[in-house]
Image 1 (cartoon, rainbow, N blue to C red):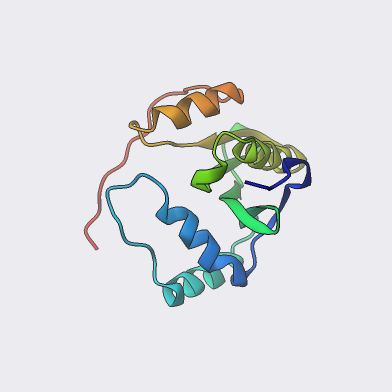
Image 2 (cartoon, rainbow, N blue to C red; image 1 turned 90 degrees about the horizontal axis):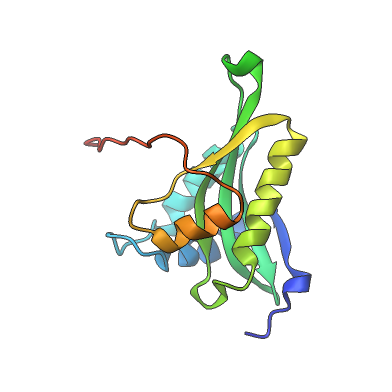
Length: 154
């Protein structure tokens, strides 16, 4: 781990970053062991670029990608039209966890939401990811309500 976290750079992801992003997702603790095929990832990435205020970001340190997240800024009819931010798909390289990469990514995402005049920033985390919950709480995120999901057959 020779990366200098003073040199961490967060930027919008490029299509050429997709293999590294998918590799980060493969390191997450998930029930599924497969990752998205690169051709399918490229098609989804191209579609995502057409959405306003929705982006995939990467964190670089030491010349390599060490983290990623997605951020959507949504317009709302409620809350007097104030926007909200939604952080998704957060991943940090296993060898860089606990070294400030996630903190820098979340600060960056929150700053973008502030610049876009969002009234809140939300994220969800699997109930089993207790270490992640402690991390988000340390950054000032609070448990708010419940998150409900339903599995859809496709």
